[in-house]
Length: 80
Image 1 (cartoon, rainbow, N blue to C red):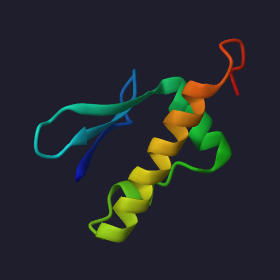
Image 2 (cartoon, rainbow, N blue to C red):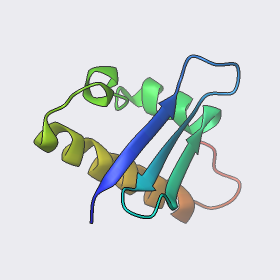
Image 3 (spheres, helix red, strand yellow):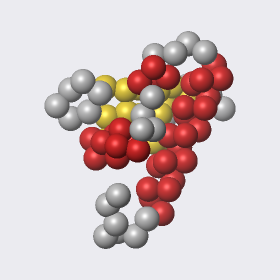
């Protein structure tokens, strides 16, 4: 399965989406609070977002999926 990263980070309401390449289905969405958390952890690699290297992009997508899943498993009252 292949994915596309659709990132709009320089807007008032930034977001990053992972899309299924063939169907366009949205697989994951990171909005401002999640993006801030990734930046604070040093995990948001802006150079990786602009890379054309398949291995770099594959690792970035993997990391973003893991972050989304870990965040979803947190208790509701925990923010960071």
